Image 1: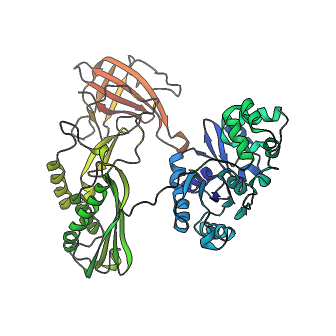
Image 2: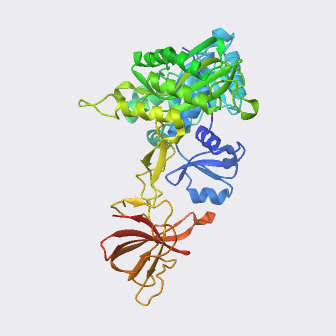
Image 3: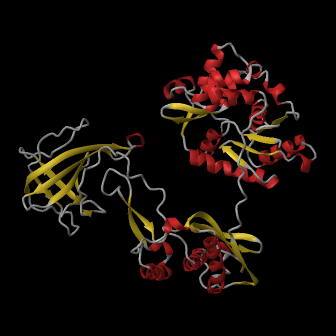
Length: 527
C-alpha cells in the first residue's frame, strides 16, 4: 500500500489567524503556557522560534500577534481540508490538525505525481496556499517527503526507495515525536550517529537491546520499514433532508404545514443512528437560490414540532407576513418558496439526552405554551435568564432567547478578582438609584486609587423609589464590609475605579453600594 501525506505547515497559526481576521503575511504565533507553541514563516524570519518565551518573542518581533492555543479550533478549521481531499480520494485519515494521510490514488489519476498535483491544486483553489505532499511506501517516509519540499510542491519516493531517501536525513527528524523522541535523539547523538542512514546501518538486535522497543521502531523507520498504519475515517452519512414544492408555495402557513412530514423523517433518520440534533441549519430556496438561511440551536434537542416552529419563525423573520412575495425594498424573499432543507449542524449521542429514572428536563406542556407565545409576539421576544461570569451582580446576569442554547457567555469558573463574595443579592437594579455615604465629619466617603477608604461609613441615605431623585432621610450604618475595588477596561476609557460596599442600615436591610468618581449609587439589595 502506497501512502500519500498532505502537510499544511503551521496549521495552528493559520486557523487562529483566520479566526482573528489577520492576514497571512502578518507575523503571528500560537502561545500556550507563556511559551511559543507554533509560529509562522513571517515570525520565524524575525527570529521567533518554538519554545521561546512570550517576552523574548515580542522583543525580537514587536509586531508579533499572539494567539491562544485551541485544539478544537484547529480541528474544525482542518475539516475543510479533509473534506476537499475526501472528495478526490475516500479513506482520509487525520493524523493531527495540519497533517493527513490517504492511500495514494495513483491508478485513477494516471500517476502518483498527477494525483499529488490534483490534490495540491484543489486545496490551493480552496484557500490553503501553503500545502506540501509526499508519496512513499510507508507513512513515516511519506511525511518526511512532504516536509522536504517547498510550498505547493510534492515529492514521490519510488517504490522500494524509502531507505535510500531517508538515509541522508538528520537524526533530528525523530525529535518531532515528543519527549521520547527528543531523548532518543540525544542518546543517538552521544553514540555518534548523525543521520538516519547511520542508524539504519546498525544491527536491529543491538538497537533493541540498547534503546528498547521504541529504539527498535525508530530503527525500522530509518530503514523504510515503518509498520505504522492509519485508520481512515468513514464517509459521514447523509443526514440532511429536504422537501421540494411543485408548484412553489407563496404562503408561509402552507410551507409550514408542508414540512411536517419532512421534519419527522429528519428526526427519525437521526434516531436510527442513535443521534439527536442540538443545532439545525434551515435553508429556504427560491428560484434555485438560497434566500433565507439560519442555524438554530436548542438547549436539549430538536423534535419534529420544534423544527416546524423554527421554519415558521424563520419565514416570519424575513418580513413575509402571510405571503412570501415580500417587498424587494424590505430585504425579504421576492419569489415563492421552491425548497426547504434541514441540515444537522450539531449532533450528539441520544444517550446523553435520555431522561433519568424518575424523569427530568422541562415540562413539554411548558415548552409548547411558550412556543405559542413566541408565535404571537416573536421568537426573540421571549427570553430566559442565565448565569455568566462577571464581577458585579448585573454583569453575572444575561438573557437568552427561549429555545436557544446559551452561547458566547463569560465563563463562570474564572477567578474574577474584585467581585463581591456571596450570598448573591435578591434585587439588582437596572438603573441604580443615587445614594450618599458620609463619615463622622459629614464628608462624603471616597476611595483612592490604591483602594483605601477616606473614612469609615457612618451614615447613608438612598433615593426615593418614586423616581423623582429625592433622597430618603439619613440612617446610621450598623455594619459594613468592603471595599472591593475594580478598574475594568481602563485601557479603553471604561467607567474608571469602581468600589463596592456591603452596608447594613439600622432597619436591618442590607444594600450593595457602589462608589465611583461621579458619586455613590445602589447596585443591589439583599432583602
